[in-house]
Length: 335
Image 1 (tube, rainbow, N blue to C red):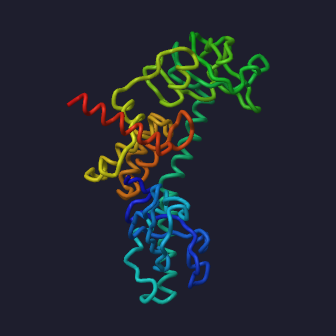
Image 2 (image 1 turned 180 degrees about the horizontal axis):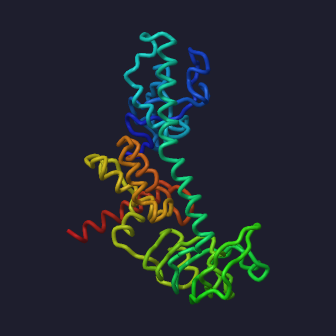
Image 3 (image 1 turned 180 degrees about the vertical axis):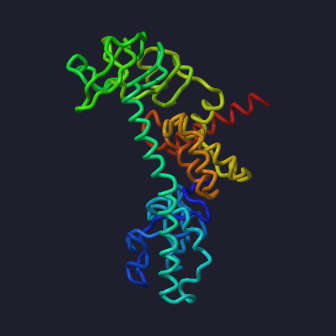
């Protein structure tokens, strides 16, 4: 079974035993939680799959042999860029000053990326919130949509944090509501059925989370919409490709010849159907993932396809084999 967690060239976090340099050289976490590049993956014999990794430290160049259980996790976000440091001959090349310059450049680039992407998102979110406060919230909700309620009045206190299905939409009987000392524009009122079975009337400002819009024709959160459809006795959302992704366990062989763009697109759709990103985040997520190393994308696809969102845990080896057996039977029938 080709089920090792980490691909060749993947940057991973791990504890570095017997460090030969000062702790600060190994990154913010010191040698107890440093980062390195996977140089080799080997399978050891035994009843259960067991993997060993040759890892070269990204800060010092030291090499260690690690079992899979010794690795904390694969690198995410800024640490993905550590693979760019690979050409630096740490041990026998530059003096400490050159190493410090390289470290400073790396962290400057990480901070620059944060300033370029995260801060504009924060500002945009604040602007949207202020616009919603002054002009009202356009939620695009219709009958049959799923939402979650937040209580802002004594009348809705029993509804707080409950899930609900919209039954009817009407104009609000008030123009505004005072929340935490600030006036918020109110446009619409929703008559809803709660997951407790009761019915209630809430204002648009009391909608905490939106899971579907436009009468369930647009699914914002696929996983939540699936669970809520079951809770309210409705048909679950269905899309042939997404349904296949949700029930398929990928192998490395299936992904081996895919381009980085195709891997990024596949991972984005997989994240969406598993409920890990929202529909509104699809385009931005895909754009970011296309800049990621291919080994990161492959490992993420393998990991997420092996997680059962209904049971909220990784699939067992026997469950993975059951999925693969079903795939084989389906292919035989199609042929």
